[in-house]
Length: 231
Image 1 (cartoon, one colour):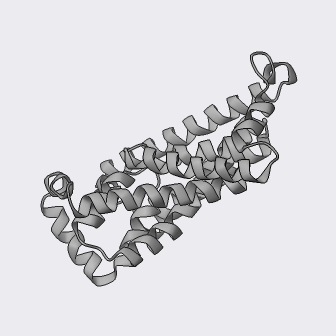
Image 2 (cartoon, one colour):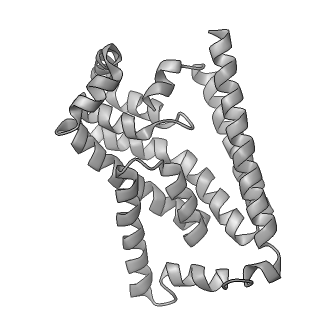
Image 3 (cartoon, one colour):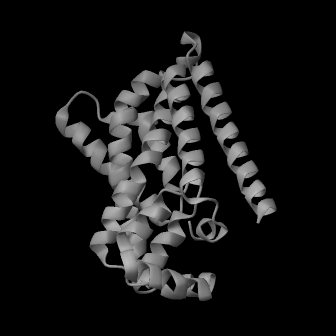
């Protein structure tokens, strides 16, 4: 167990380091005035993706992001990268809001698929573990969905399919997902916003929040290999 714990800890540290290095390098490079317009004007491109200054166009941009983000998440792309994309395009606040909504759309699609046509995938992938989670969901569906969502660097796609296959009621599934999605959405939207704007303060804030998220999670619940396989 100790060796497995050390392995997971090392993996988390390497992932955190890679993210910090990537977004810091991105911020440092894009902070240079000449770089921001050497190929195209990044600020102009962001404004274009946001829909410009007209309210209807900005609303259309937000709706397009929600639908595209939800579809990409439903296809299996980690929601964290949608949060980063949201931060890059819309900034930390709106990026967080839109990426959380997109994550809920994608999660709902996979939940319905897990409840119907893809239920066999979760059953084959989890085997006896699925019976354990069925019991947990029956005891307190909201808590166990939330527990799964809060685990960093995890397989959210499988969690969505599992909840559908286990017939978790939709309301606690959505509420647990909503609350659980927010922390990492904030972190990755802030990473994306800081990276594209060359804002090292946002990178530092996102890095600190990610470290707190990972290690507070370990202190509260310990390292669970079973949970990691699910998420």
